[in-house]
Length: 319
Image 1 (cartoon, helix red, strand yellow):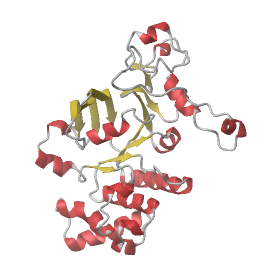
Image 2 (image 1 turned 30 degrees about the vertical axis):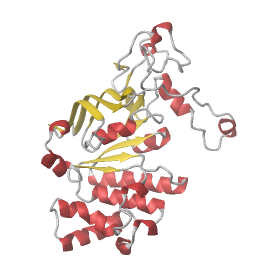
Image 3 (image 1 turned 60 degrees about the vertical axis):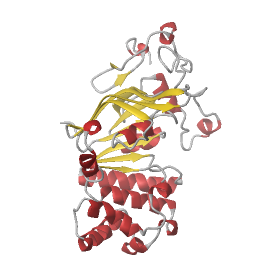
Image 4 (image 1 turned 90 degrees about the vertical axis):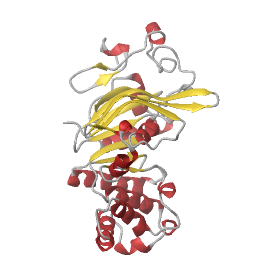
């Protein structure tokens, strides 16, 4: 059974200089109660993918393919149906809570708003539900009377999670939920997210550039590069694609001075989406690229029963 299915999803932005392909032919599936992480460098298309799921992209974006939520295509929904889906069936935790909260509304009113808009509670029941949600995310009930500027960044992120949980959706999309948080608060947030997802059986699609965060939180990972998925597989397995391996190697090992003093970063920059390389988009930066990599585009191919990768070396079991 599949809760969310992306079928050949592509997103292109129209700008004065031309068209920018941000997401290119992505196909993914998410089962009920499963946590899927999407990882990649900045500019790989992760946030565009997340916003496309609930049709939150700007007007200059052209979307093709299918986004099936519970078997229903989000891209063909009328506005009334789409409004009913947002928050109630699928909700999103935006990157940077300071921009996702209304600075002139109290926290409790903002958490209660989706409940009232979807007519899932009376004002009295909504207030009681706000108290429950604040307690679930580790905040005292009196914080409902606070304004966003009166709480810390980590607390604002907890408020965003409470809002996402308010209508008991089947799916939560978390776009960089730990951005700009210090390590201690980040660890608390990740533990909170994992516990809430596990206890309530909610599916999670989590976006991050931090591979270690996703590996610790999600069941499966999808690695994106230049708008495409280049590898999928369980988070506890060994990566096969050279780009995925480079991402994993870029993080120093805690307690290992050698890895801290000599980090194994990935040289070069991601390609300009308006001037993508021919063949495999990663080949100009790939340390093991073959001559054919610059001419032949590579689609995802099955490595084993649990993993797929878009790399010609997969067949030779060399990466």
